[in-house]
Image 1 (cartoon, helix red, strand yellow):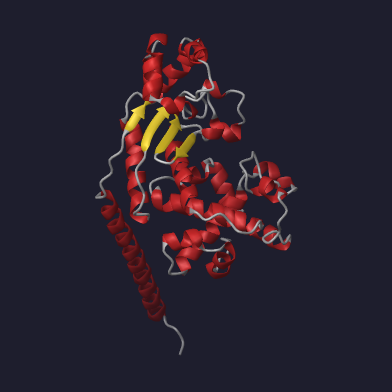
Image 2: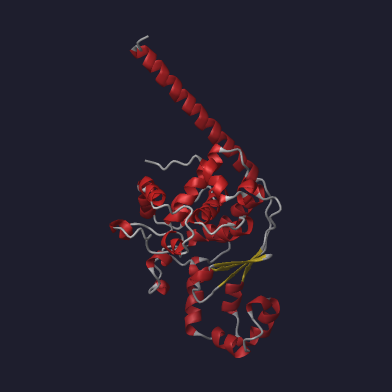
Length: 329
C-alpha cells in the first residue's frame, strides 16, 4: 500500500511524540534522583590551614605544629618553617589565594553537592576533614586524599592565566582554575572505587579512565564535559568531530589489546597533544584514549542493566564487548 502524505505525517507525528515521551521520562527520572540527592545531609569540617599559616608569626609555630602535625614532618628543622613564615614569595602566594578564595562559601558550594552525589551512589562514603593549604604550586599534587582527610592546594587554582603559572606548560596551566576543584576532587575519590585493570592492555587503560569520567558524569551533573576531562571547549569539540576517525585508527592499528607501554604516553597521560604520528597531531588534544574509553563506558551503561558499583569491578573486555559502542559520525 502506497504511503500518502497523511500516512507520512501521522508516522512522523507518532515518532516525535514517542521521542518526546522518552526524553520526558528520562529527564523526569533524573530530576527525581537529583531531588533525592539534595536531601542527603552532609556535614564536614573545613579547615583553612592556608589562612592559619598566613596569619601566623614565628612565635606561633609551636601552636601550629601541635594543631596541624601532618603539615610539619619531623625530619624538617623548625628553621625551615620560620623562614617560610617570613618569606616574601610565600606571602604573595597567600595573598593571591586569599583574593581568589576569601571565604568558605565557594568551596562549600563545590564540595557539599559532590559529597552528596558520592554518598548517594556509594552509601558507605564517609565525609572527610577538608584542609586547604598552599603547596608552592605543586600542580602534580593539587588534591591529596589520605584516609579521612582531603587536602586541597588552593594555590593551584588561581586561574589559568595567573602570573604565578608562567613557565608551566599550557596543557597543564589551563586546568589550574577554581572550576577544576570539583573534577579534581571527584577524580581522587573515583580512584578509591575503581578496580585497577588486571591486564596491561590499552583497552584496560582507556576503560579505567572511562569509568573515572563516568563517575564525574553522575557526581558532577552541572559540570561541562570539557571540564570533566580537562579540555578547553575547543579541544572537546575537536574530539567530538573526530571520534569516528580516531576509533578507526585504533581498530585498524590493532591497538586495543596491545600491551605496549608507550601507548599510555601517546594517548592516555596528560600531554599537549595525542601522538598518532600524523599531520593532525598538533591539532589534537592529549588524553584521547581517555575520551574514547569514556564513550565506551557510557555506551555500556546505556545498553546494560548494571549499577554503578557493578561497573567499578567489571572487566574492561566485558564492558567493551557488551557496550555496543559505535563512534559518532
